[in-house]
Length: 424
Image 1 (cartoon, rainbow, N blue to C red):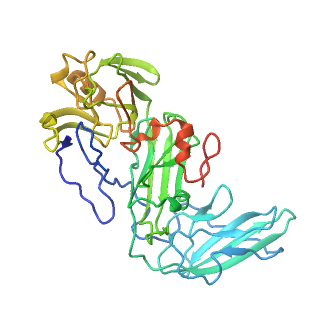
Image 2: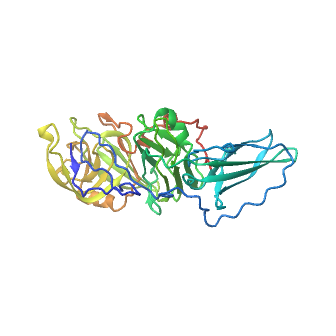
């Protein structure tokens, strides 16, 4: 099994390490390290979001009083608490206000299905809040309910989480929203957690979440690759979310990123060629050498996860002596956790386009590797077909290696045909 040599990742108190775990060409699965996007807050806060207008004063109630959740007098509520009310048939919530005991207003949004009002940031621990909900009935009456509740103390046991998306970065059209959890989310908790994972795209594109089997990762994607120029805004609102194993979500994470031009790579083992498309037009055909039969490349759609202009592949821990080596590598682009890359391989240039000799990587000439490296982004897709091995689920960002119909089966919540719109 090969691995990159690298400086150690720094795991700070507020964010998780930003480097991917690096391994070279090989079969062994390597668990990813966390990557932290921007976070909403290191300590949950009730501060109002800037630039948000104060709510209008609710009309005088003329209908029956509303029953709110949390109920009046409730204690030890999670800081992920949302505000909801039992609304008369045909009625709709017209306003929600939430204020801390010091009078500071908490800003938030109503879910698109009207089921609850979600604060824009986690509430503070050990704090009293008062919620007021006003609803308009179909008969013209207004109903109102008020509830004062208190949040719980800060929990001692939390899960670790990560978000592979960063503010103001530009990604390829196959960049999934990738969240990670350590330990994994128990299956019975995934629906509740998924309800707190918000994605908004501009222009609007429907999407869905998919959980890997052990609950350590979830991917969000659309039925097709993202439209070039799309802005993706993500909030993984986990702070204070209670889990059945006695743990709570650690923090909220947020990121807003951009999707760049379309750059797609397709490799056919039958021809041993890579065809490169930019915005739908073929811009280059590149001879390749894939994995030999004993160490085949994976067939499936992978995504560029990380790029290193220069590094070292070190396979001295491989159980097979024939596969042990230490080699300087240029223009490496990681595709799987198991150690598959696109990279420069000057030693195999004489057989590229004709014979497979690698340990599972996509070998290209130094000139072609440089050309690709200068043009690709993290999130650009590469599809390999016709090899002896199928890409294993979760071995890299494998969201696009499934058909849409299979992908939505991994959601913990029902997915409408064609995908879901934004929840907020």
